Structure formats: C-alpha cells, structure tokens
Amino acid sequence: MSNAIQTPANAQPAKKESSPIIAVRKSCNPDGIGLSHYVLMDRKAAK
Amino acid sequence: MSVAEQSRAGVAGPLIPVDIGHDRYTALTDPNTAFWALVDKKRVGESEAHGSLLASFHENAAAFAREMHALRFELTPSGVYLNPTERCNLNCTYCYLPGQQRSEGRHMPVDTLLVSLEKLRTYFRSVMPEGRKPRAIFHGAEPLMNKAAVFEAIRAFGDHFAFGIQTNGTLLDEEAMSFLTSRNVSIGLSLDGPMPSITDATRLTWGGKSVHDKVLTAMDKLRGYGSWSVITTCTTENLPHLTRMVELFHAREVPTCMLNTLRCTLPGARGVKPADADMAQSFFGALDRSHALFKETGRKLVVANFANILIAILAPTARRLMCDISPCGGGRAFFALAADGSLYPCSEFIGVPHFNGGNLFDAGGVEAALASEAFRTVTERDVDTFQPCSDCAIRHFCGSPCPAEAHEMNGGMQQIGAFCEFYKEQVNYALRLIADGKADDYLWDGWDAGTETTFQVQ
Image 1 (tube, rainbow over the protein chains, first blue to last red):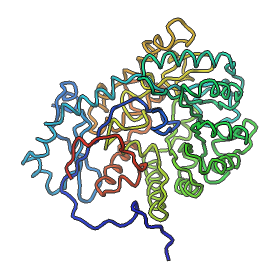
Image 2: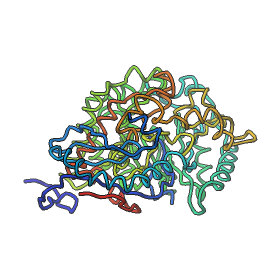
Image 3: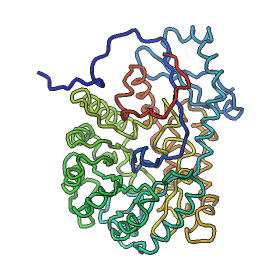
Image 4: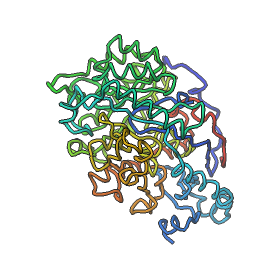
C-alpha cells in the first residue's frame, strides 16, 4: 500500500485532450534581483 | 537570411524548428525575442501555412523584443558578493580561487568591511528604488574563516541589506547557526556526495580530512529553517551518484538544491570536468528522481539551476539566477568585492587579475569599476554577436555561461562556455516537461506570483 499523500499538487487531474499548439509567456518587472549560480535567495527577501 | 543576420537586423521570425525529442511536439522558436511554441509535429506545416501562430507572434514580437532588451541591457546592480577573506580551510579540487590565496591569503579587517558596506549602501541607494534592499552575499574562500568581521557587518547593516552566506558548513557551530538564523540570513551549504568517499574525492581539508559528516550535521540543524539551500558541484567523481544525492537532500528536507556544473575557469577544475552527454544523463536522472519523490510524498525538492532554465523559457524576466542569460549578471546585476577591496564582475573572476575593475576605496568606487574595461569585457559579451551562439535557436534560454570559462578555458569572450551541448539538452528536457504539462512540478509553489500572462495558446 502506498504512503503517498494526495495533495492538489500530486492528485491526478482529469484527462483532457492536449492542444496541438502550446505557447505561454509570462512577464514581470525585471528588477535585477538575480544572482550568480552560487547562492539562491528567496525572491521575497529583496523586497 | 541566417539567424545571425536576422538578429543584427532585429527581424522577428520566421520561427525556427527545434527537435526537442518529444513524441508529439516539436518546438518553434524566435531566438531574438526568446519566443517559443510547441506544435504538434503533424501540424507544423499546417500551422505555418495558416499563419495563425506566426500572426499572433508578430503582433507581440516588438513587446517581447523590448522586454528582452530591458532584461539584457538595462538592469542596474542590486547585489554584491562580499569576500571577507581569501582563506579557506578546505582545498577543493575545482576551486576558482588560487591555492596560495586560500592557504596564505588575507582577511579583510572588520573596520574595512564596515566602511565597505557603508560605501556600498550609498551606491545601491543611488541606483535602487527606495524601500528595496540590495543583496549582500558573503562568499569565498570560506567567509566564516573571518567570522568576527562577518557577524559585525550583519549586526551593523542588517536593516540595509538582505544578507546571505555561502559556506562549506564546517564552521557553522551552534553560536554561528543561532546568530545567522535569528537574523534570517540565507544560508547556502556545499556537499558533493551522498557518502564520505564521494564527497572526499573533491572536498577535503588542507590536511586531507573529510568534512562530509560536518556538513550533514549542519544540514540537520537547518532542517525547518526557511531560507537555506545546498549546492552540489557536479564532477566526474560524483556524477554516477546524483540520484542518491537527490534522495539524501529530499530525506533531509532540503527545500532547494543546486546541481551545478563545475566552473572550469582555473585549470584544476578541468581535470574533473564531465563530458556533456554524461552530465545530461546523470542530471536528468536526478531530476526524474526528484519528481518521483514529489509524487510519492507531496514534498518538492526544487533543483534551482534547472528551475531557472524553466523560468527563463516560461517567463524570461522572472528568472532568479543570472548566469544563463547574455550578457550574464556579472558586472551589471551584481558584482564582487574581494578581500583586498578590489572589485570584480563576479567572484568567478577573482583568480584572474585581468578582470580587476579597480578598488572600492579608489576615487571612482563602484561606478568607475562598472565602467572599467575589465567589467565591460564581461558585460559586452553578447551571444548575438559571435558564432556558434548567434545561430543557436535557444541562445537566450542559455546565455552560453560562463564568460570566465570562455575566456580562460576556450580562449576568449567570443567563445562558448564549458557545457554547450549540456545546455541544449537541458532546454530540450525543459520543453518536454512543458509539453507534458509537468513544468510546475519542478518549480517553487507560487513561482509566477507577480507575473502576468502576455501570450497563451494552449
């Protein structure tokens, strides 16, 4: 028996026909919070 | 007209097909604007013929181009890497800092560090919106070798900077842990293996002692803390063990990890450089395992360097790391302060004197360094202007990192970085996840808060 916890994130969604075209773009203010590959910091920390 | 010629002419489209290795979808991209679409292979010709996708793209192309230009050329610095010492208690195979510095180098005196932060605060106030805190990351070498200065700086400037520290974890005793966590300092650890023998292959003390267990102890103490991560540097020594690495991190409730390709800036690193194909195979195996663990437990372990590639595709301006963009963030989104007061575009360059842009205590300070030839050599490295990048369909999802490697390993700024083929495979993998509707599983919950959808066909 699986111990998996069913959450909204991992619950199986209803099967639906996928689109012949998928294209998504989101945008926000490029506020220059990015750092290099060394340290990850929460985006909220800079606000 | 070639892709490079289109770039120079600022022309949008036609869309360029990219085989992403998916059963159903192929990608069409416009490299100039970082636009992409996934199209059913059976209908690629039909879509192009009908022109609906192309027409929709062309309606938005100018806005996408403006967005990419702002991201690539109009940012001002909002972060600084602080190197409070040249010394490190470890002698890692692949370190980007020269060994003599790390064994015999200097500490920055506490007073110098405090004056430095005052100067940096003044600078950031001049370029950042009011109410925003610049980020200051203590970095190394091992910053806790100069713990007294670091802690005094955090005490004095905690209201003015968002502080972080990247540490090897060996000096994080109870007092240090309490000090840092009580002040919400972001903590990054480093661990290269799921067992001592693997970690020890690249990360030992100068005396040859293992530090594996000390890092695990630090990880246990940080469990439940809100702002910490662990970096694994991927080398030939640990590549076969990346899946176990992910299992270890997930079991210890690490919220975020990074599985970074090692940087090949200095020759020592190149001896443990994995081949691109090997890197891709192991890296994707680790990502697959992280996803399986999420499905089993409902708890994510975000692999941040991959998440950043996904975000670069889905929302270019929302990316959190600035290596995978051209020009990279070095010298324009952030810069580095060395222990002697010298300013470099990024810590990666501290071992290469040619990239010293001046001293914080010189008359021109940060502004002079940003305008220096040393910095401009980095900030003017543009993948639109040299081959093979200028003809690459995914160049703005990749950025051809890292300029330090390109310069030191491959012979100049007009060269690719160290892992070109791996990056191509990584982008293909990310696009396959998007095609399968799984991308959100690999990203932080709420990653797109504050964004707006500017294009959608689904």
